[in-house]
Length: 564
Ligand SMILES: NC(=O)C1=CN([C@@H]2O[C@H](COP(=O)(O)OP(=O)(O)OC[C@H]3O[C@@H](n4cnc5c(N)ncnc54)[C@H](O)[C@@H]3O)[C@@H](O)[C@H]2O)C=CC1
Ligand SMILES: CC(=O)C(=O)O
Ligand SMILES: [Mg+2]
Image (cartoon, rainbow, N blue to C red):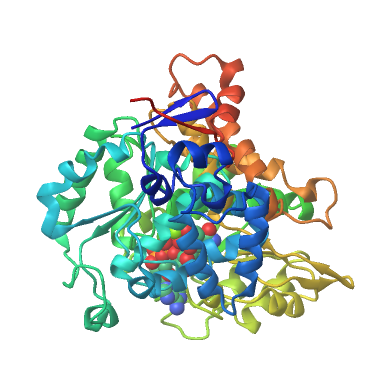
């Protein structure tokens, strides 16, 4: 019904239809000529505003709210009313708005999803409607879709099972795909796979909007996922599918099942691995301790933890360590302590990261039957400590002090989200290490004071990676997303580290530069895809232009009324 020609859009939509379509609505920015052409006079107040004026007005309104959850609801409403304005606001104010659209507030948004729900966005595909998936996806509204973020809501940040409320996460991630990666909003689709929930609060809540049923598991779950992926590939053969916030028994399993069938990746496993590796490579520039001499302790041997260990290990191999030597450098600590050969209850994806029993035989332990994180730090003296356990405060003072005792510049990354789940706060780490630690956190924290000045703490979050990976892969039509592409993303991120020029500066570029970061990452990813033969018919020297051309900037196009 609407056609884009050059910079203008010709449409036969009525005034009400234009105002109701978030992709076309301009609100008070409809020009006089458009108001004449579409009979918009009277439906809008007479003053015509520019996009910049609309942004200022909305920013003022946003700042007037008392809580971040209110701001989240306001921004979600704006996104569902006028996407161009929403993205103009977001792109111009990334530092201020990311903590609302994304972590930490998006976590509360998921917890309150049933109460905040106003207008539908994206797709809810539920077990009772499995047979209709093809029909649902077939709607012409989704013809332009190129990028999907999907969750089943079982492991939302560190907040656990949020059922259908988990939809806030794909919506938030795709807001960053557009805000940072420049994908046109019409090409993005958030999907919630509603397979039930085991969250008793959701099940007992009379206002819960999801399918009120305990989680479907086992073969029935796998069949549902298979039906979903098959339908997606049939509808959009070249789509990019990002898996997000699946629980650990499904995340890597589904990635392994589908990674060779379509262009797909798991953000928690692979995106997190790339941001952690990239930040570590930046830290190595500062500490001078080469990668081949690093020892890495990870608290939380789940999807993110094992993804991180796998990519850092690959980087160590690239740097010259043998496979077997690199394997000895990882100390994965989960609920039952250090993962050691012969332990019971290990998941398949944890198996490559077990410590040898003989290697720890002489360790001094607090409790002989369990190797706790503090034992690991005291005995193995890791150079790097990473937290992806979702356990607030798990990097206790003795643990952090032991890191500081063993290292001149300990690298400490409490990466769990949202803010309330961080393994330690930057202020505490700073105090317990006398300001010597290189810190990265998953969610935003207030600045710390270092050498008498305010120092912004690096946000080591996969938002530095996935928008660029998606942009790069889509711009060149990569057939698959490979581990090599995530390594390229990690190295590209490290190459843009401010600390390369001055070791007192940050390890990562600021959040306000995430659009530039996405471009840098996209270029590295696309070049790697080309190198690996994942790209057809695009000469190397045209890749950057393709990426830049794919980056949409939120601006209003002029509209003309279709004749007849
Ligand atoms: N900064 C970032 O970019 C990212 C951060 N994360 C955060 O990392 C956390 C974990 O995410 P996933 O790995 O996907 O979840 P997961 O559920 O796959 O893994 C968490 C692991 O922590 C373990 N764990 C729980 N309590 C523990 C304890 N007291 N001590 C040691 N281990 C414990 C669990 O058994 C599990 O193996 C979440 O909070 C998530 O928000 C995840 C992805 C990206
Ligand atoms: C950042 C992210 O993907 C997570 O916390 O799950
Ligand atoms: Mg995630």
